[in-house]
Length: 377
Image 1 (tube, one colour):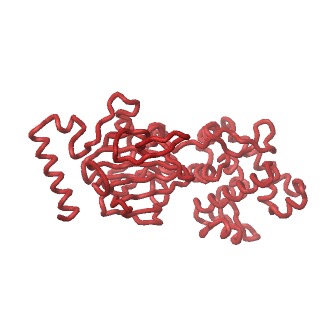
Image 2 (tube, helix red, strand yellow):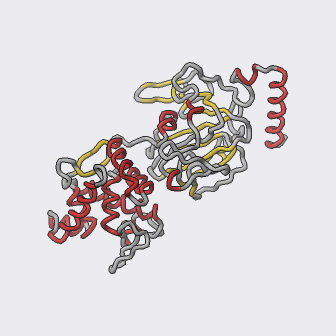
Image 3 (cartoon, helix red, strand yellow):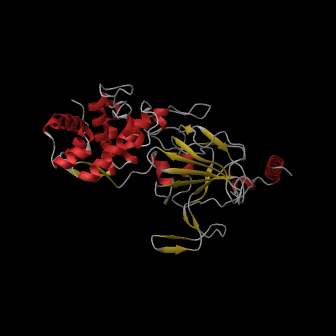
């Protein structure tokens, strides 16, 4: 029997049983989602409170399941808003789950994602904007899509129907349909296995971040010290992002700047101030010496940073964020790092101090950064 015929037969059986036993569906053990419903747990019903709407803007998904790129790149929303949570993240008695050692503790069975039960064929959406890095069948037979998001996090969508509408290398927006609920791989019934991973590959519980409406905040970010902006500090990631978000209505390309900054471990307000000074937020800007785009990257520098199109907003910001993060790590001071960005790290390193010619440039960036730290005048 073909996969499609098998799925059709399962749906027929499910409907038949529902007609005979009205408690079948409410028990949480139908063929549509046979995993036990986690009633009474702090995660029970969390999926019912999360939709593909952006909590921060109130923008609602269209019938096609997509939202605007600027909103979607900030939001982290349910990949299956029509479903219900059927298995939580963490230690479990479910024998199908593999063993794992987490924070020094070994568990016999550990679920490294959450399961969301829904009828076969239900649309599955990208939880946030990013690039598809996998779209196909794993060794265990499960059809999987993986998306790397602009801030470095990766989401995984498992047990999908084999007919996928996305391919590796494709950029998708949050809320865009990337597949349908299937029954591929080792599964007890139709559901979506949804995983969230850090850029280093560590599994993270997606449930609280879906409820929060955004991807996890980094613990710290490199940025100017409030006491002395010329000095570098490891600032609270949550605090720096909250400050940036409060000022984001005044910052063009705020969503893209935020993502690029977080992916490279820097304060997004600093990156925004740098972009403002370098290009005035003009993605098509070209200097007299040939520097290009929002971050004014020289072609050779851009190529070394993996930027293939300097006029692509996200690529240029990713390259600029990577380059200034590198200087912050090398020099350990904001003023020295900005000088290196402007005059070249070799020259600044050889000089051992901030060149006089860079003082005005640094001052403009830090003044702009300071305006993002509080309400607009």
